[in-house]
Image (cartoon, rainbow, N blue to C red; front, side):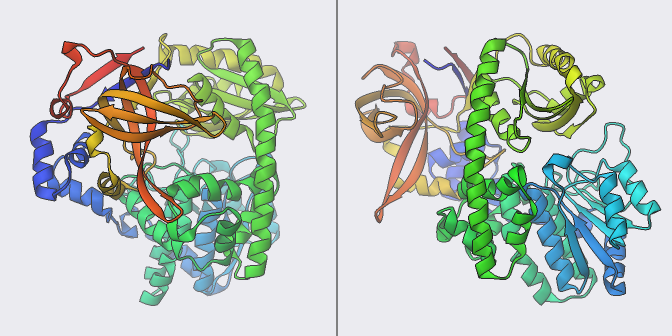
Length: 585
């Protein structure tokens, strides 16, 4: 039986009742809102409306970035937008290019090759100077490129930095105008780079007196903001939530030929586009070319106005994504074998000859899920290695790399994900140092999965009406996870295998009510004995199939909970459990 800790945050009944009365919502919905911190009617309404929006002027000093850009446009100087090879990098580049071209600018782009490394490089600066760039605008990079920006200016290139990554540990910033939500004190400090580019574009249009029509056209690029917001896994709170909700509507109605073609090859219904389709269908395809071949294919897809060319690139990205999955499976098998040989570690550094540097980050995420520990995957090539790491909640991976910096040539990233470069001979020392740092930071006890409960309910509440009501909490993602519903005293009955035994459907019974439920990917056995009492959590979804719309209950976690007088908690009392953390084996 799986090890999980159910965490039920404080939920005062008076606050639940107040929201029920003032908002006209169900008890379950009120519980979710209270447990997620939206305790007053005004705060709850603001969250449900998802309408938070701030002026670009809230970026301190943004006028120092706008002025040189508009001056370069008016002078007809060559402007280069330097992006990155992931979804956020190409989308932020596309937003700026589309706006600058609308203003009449002479614009080209530079997307680095993943093999050459992340960010602005000195060689790139020299190349851009040779080809006539007079203004360099970075998108999704360069907040740490102090020396590179200095070199650009010495070569006669003006620079504007737009980014959202962490600055250097010593606090040194590039000597250039900076548009960065955290550094510039913007009210939503965790915008993705494409949202930053969108705000910069908005500021450019407003300062140029382009008119309302131009600003309206810019809102069509919210489809790109939606793609990047999901792909970059930023917290879906505040303005991020508002941008994604508006962006999903823009994506559903997008006129960009490349995006329409990409949705077609990915089998995505534009009329029903949601964050899951971005995360599992569109973003992987946009990332695939940059991981294996050329990231500018994704940028070309976003910028093309030719439907035939859009279809051609979309098929190219789809094929690259299929190849990426095959490479990922091979590397994962090797990584799993290596992890098993290493045994229990506080942090893992896994290495392989010939591993594809563009795929190891994905595999690192899978290995973190499997081990519950931070993992850095290093692709070795000759005497050098390039790595990509992923972390667990509660462990600052970037801080861990800083603690091990003596073993590294270069590193960067943030708490949850980071990249490294190192010499082959330093791998063993790096692995030992990272494990030692993690042992202190994480502690001796291996963390168990934590299931945070949003509402304690009865089977009788789990219908289509509640499923539709909970949909108002979307879009879901980091900091606004899908809703987790708990049944405190459940019994599982009538199990029936599906999908050649890979999945299971069964009946859940609680308080004389029943509901049908499914469990995916865990085999045909019930998580507890047939008819035994369990404490279980579920997702309530809307399932559409052959024109039929119905609620679908999906099991998340379950642990045996033999019924006893002290555990026989009435549902209405369980709904208000305050701050209980149930450590269950």
